[in-house]
Length: 446
Image 1 (cartoon, one colour):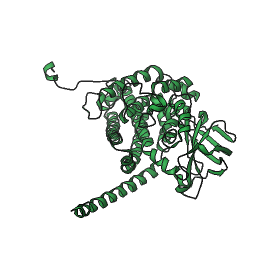
Image 2 (tube, one colour):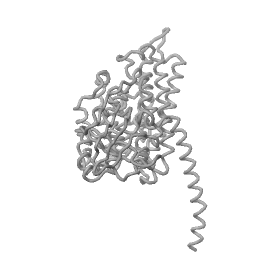
Image 3 (tube, rainbow, N blue to C red):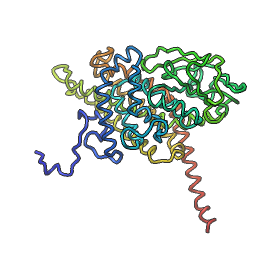
Image 4 (cartoon, rainbow, N blue to C red):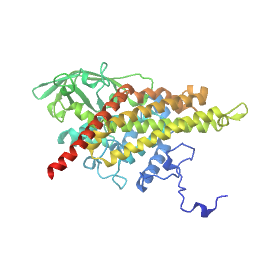
């Protein structure tokens, strides 16, 4: 028997429902070097909001293919949209942090993690996808006029900004995009098409990657296109999943874009996109890891009550094996994700860009592969219930459809694996070069 004296000095602080592996370990009375009281406060706020206002509605929103406008306004009011554009906090365009503290990347991780408990890629990308990937280029490279006009309504949920890079013939191979913009007087004349653009159908602003110069990455620029510009047409696409995220096919037919809507400098578009890739993939990793955990948690809950051959499923060794395999992959992946989050929090931006590209690329592959594995194993545990939309297997059925929505965007597995090795190899070569140069530099000083 455990006495109070035995518990003295022991961490017994449990948050959530307490299902094994159902939450990150720091929710379940394990020690952590990463989180403080502000993270606990924020976790509680996010969980209560998701449970009260979102969890029971995502299925209907997904079936209808739309999220109510008031949800965007509420997300803006709460500050979650401003949080998802990265650091620093955009006080100039939003105002002070509504929580009474300056959020860091772990607060952002908590936000993605808690909202992903819904088990809906459509909701996650529908409410914040465009803001996460489309607004940062405006925030970091737009003119003051553009930022003053675009940033406040977007971070407050009044308007939506999306990122338009992918084309029918150019996805991960961004350098080969064909969309063109030619400068004629005070306007760029934009022509081309974009495909699989998240939030595009209801977006007010489009951060568009287009070719303004020579072939290759050096000829790519970013233009901010605005809803209502003549020649801009959007058509909602029918996809396997993420139905409420507004996946869109976009065409530009001689769209006149003011010169002032150029983000940064001509020919620097690819560089600007690269600057946000670590943060974008961090968001993918956070969502995918919780989606995998949702499959694990729901499987364990279901296996504890469903009976076959006179036993609950969890009493069968083969089911415990499935749960164990899911648990070990999810826990290992979450630990890697927290390590990357810590690097993002503590490194200067230039250092993070230099060092983390390979890690975030490889981690994205890890997270989406774990999500795919857990969705598959959960479907086996749920049986026919995982094949029916709605009901007990709702999340598992939906996440099985939406695995590819996480695995392909932001860099497909094949591209990410190759990138991870190349980036890490280059970094190691640079480190060796600096190490060899250091003694010579020291000798020169003497």
